[in-house]
Every structure is written in C-alpha cells, then in structure tokens.
Length: 280
Image (cartoon, rainbow, N blue to C red; front, side):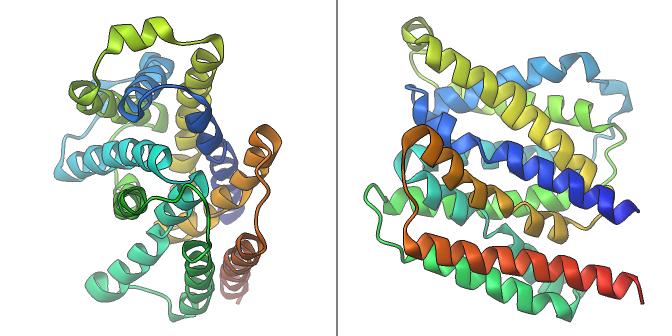
C-alpha cells in the first residue's frame, strides 16, 4: 500500500536525520561554517542528478528554497548555542504550526488529529521545562523559529516542482550553501585547522544525514500528507538521545523519557487512526 511506503520513507528519514545533533556537536567549527560545508557536500553528492531544465521556477519553489535554507542554517546555529536535545525538540514543533495552518487558513484538517497533536504538545512542553545544563534562551528561540521554517519545508516540498527528489535536494542545498557563504568567516583558516574527525563528521552530515535523509523525506511526501510526515519524523528527536548516549555518554533524564513517551504515543495513535479510517 502507498501509505506503508510513505510511513517507511518517513521513518528512514527520521532515523538518518537523528544523527545530526551528535555530529554538529562533535565537529569543532563555527555554526555557519558547518551549515555551509554540510550543504556544499550534499549539493556535490546529488549534483549529477540536478536537471535545471525540468524545474518549475515558481513562487512555491522560491519559498521551499528559502524555508529549507533557513531550517538547515538555524538548526546548526541553535545546536551550537543550546543543547542538542532542546534544538531538536523545539524544531519539531513544526507539526503544531502545520496543524494550525490547515485549521485556521486552509480549513482542511481532520479533527481526529487533535488528540495526537495534544500528546505531542505535552511531550514538547516537558522537554522545554526540563532543567538542563547548557540550555540557552537565544538558541532556544532560534530553534523555535527553525520549526516554523521546517513546517514550510514540509508544506512546500509536497508541491509539484517538476523535478525528482535528488535534483530538488541538490538545488536546495546549493541555495543553502550560497546563503550561508557570506556569513562564514575565515573559511580557509578553519578548513586548514580541521581534524580528521571534523572532516569525517562534515562528510557524513552532508552526504548521508542531509542528502539521504531529505531524499527519503521527499519520497514520503508523495504518499502521505505533510502533517503526517512531520508527525512520523518526530522519531528523530526520540532517537537522537540514543546516538548522544552512544557517542557522548549523555544519559536522558526522567522528564526527557516521559516527554518522549507522550510524543511517541501521539505518533502511534495518529498512524493507528489513519489506518482505521482508511480501512472503513
């Protein structure tokens, strides 16, 4: 079934994305440099698939490029300023903005999604009130703004842009690279001082975490709605603490575990309701 494909693609995207926080923390370089280098690597990874002649140059594409670039850059900046957990959880308030958008503007929303959204909101609130060393107000606000842009990415990615996923990802990351470049200082000096671990982290961030992650993300949007994809991709902040524990030995708190339970419950209930109504 198409819905199963959409769910599978969204889960894979979330799992691949979940490695981002760890690598961003481990790479010893400024935020804008990481954002610039990561998108350059992602662009080069999919450059052979870029087909400019197929692309529909519309306002929807313009907003996709804008929201995509801001999402990637602001998330790196937020992760450097605040905790990786806070940055990810705040970015993933995106389903709430999508829900409100469909409800208030489009007047197109399933009321049955209100309950799973409520569970997700409770989970996010628990994360926000969790006392963590290294939390930063500015970083939290930037992460929250990133969630608005991420909601835009979900909405505009579902539009018809005339080209396939790999080509679109190449264009999005080229745009991100060009936007981040003017804000990146001392590029040559930073590059010279990179350690092998930093280079490895950047290569994985660009070629796998971003390129492959967004490829599956765009595929998922062909089969299920942007709101459903965003809810499923909440698996990313749930798996992120696992990678953080494995590589940085950071143990999640009880509040984080309870918050994760509410978020995961919201995802499962949403998927269950979808299956129930599709089978009726």
